[in-house]
Amino acid sequence: MTTPVNVTVTGAAGQIGYALLFRIASGQLLGADTPVKLRLLEIPQGVKAAEGTAMELEDCAFPLLAGIDIFDDPKAGFEGANVALLVGARPRTKGMERGDLLEANGGIFGPQGEAINAGAADDIRVLVVGNPANTNALIAQQHAPDVPAERFTAMTRLDHNRALSQLAAKTGAAVSDIADLTIWGNHSATQYPDVFHATVAGKAATELVDQSWLESDFIPTVAKRGAAIIEARGASSAASAANAAIDHVHDWVNGTADGSWTSAAIVSDGSYGVPEGLISSFPVRAKDGKWEIVQGLEVNDFSRAKIDASVAELVEERDAVKGLGLI
Ligand code: NDP
Image (cartoon, rainbow, N blue to C red; front, side, top):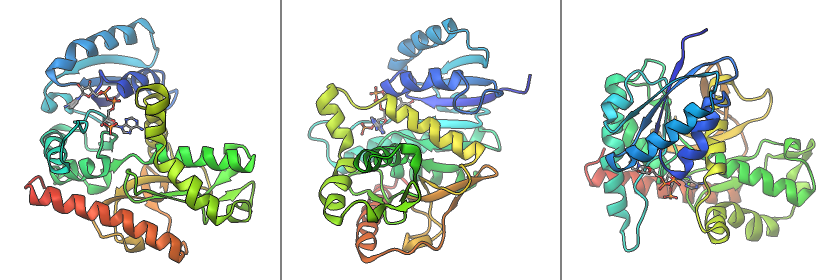
């Protein structure tokens, strides 16, 4: 049997964690030939519930699950980690100002970045799911100076999948018929789902949908889908977020399908006018274990304005965490 891959999951006792861990242990994250060791990181109050989840994982007798350890100390939790899924975050509570939210998350993601820097494996790959995901990823990355910056990413794959599904429903196509859709910017209400390069069964999406549908239906539906799910379910989306995390890491490690691209928030190299160093969502392909930004796409005026607005929000968040001394 090959050496197991160490996968650290924070917020392991939460809703997303519960939807995620069984899929990782069954082989859906890294493939059916790759054994995994799970390292569950929780805050002390979450440890008991994580122990319960670990018992259920044992009871599944997954052939690929080579072990489970539970931690409440980030240094121990990230020791030897090859993949880290940072799910646990401080949610915004009523009356909380944005500065308080950023500060609370800085207190989580700063030390986690340091712990990754100190003890993770050389091939560590980090996906931040906990919100505000892009800026939490930036905080962690800035606290891990010895880890290549490209190893820190944030999740916009759920937005991407939501956009795929909406466009498929509108055009009567199968999700698998759609290619080259992009989420740009921040994983927030300002995100920009862009269909201007997308194809539906080989046909330009823009020939099948009109601008008014894009502006008044598609873009707001994708951006506000999380709130709509809370309204319907009485709880936030969890299984779909976990599914997107699986998709993101699976593609990162195994490569995206030939031809098409997906969306992920990765450290900007300045492409498409996004300031270098920001963790912003781009059209990306994965090859040989690395994300690459799809280059050379034409950006029309409508898209430019939407991308700029979302990137401006990321700049604001970065400046706010800088101002708070969190990076
Ligand atoms: P969830 O598992 O539902 O969500 C976890 C995080 O994922 C939240 O920040 C949430 O953001 C974010 N998220 C990103 N995308 C989505 C999406 N599409 N739908 C829903 N959430 C999304 O939260 P729980 O409260 O159930 O669990 C959190 C766990 O994390 C708890 O067990 C807690 O103890 C733990 N925790 C662990 C920490 C650590 O390991 N150091 C630190 C802090 C918490 P949003 O709030 O915006 O919905």
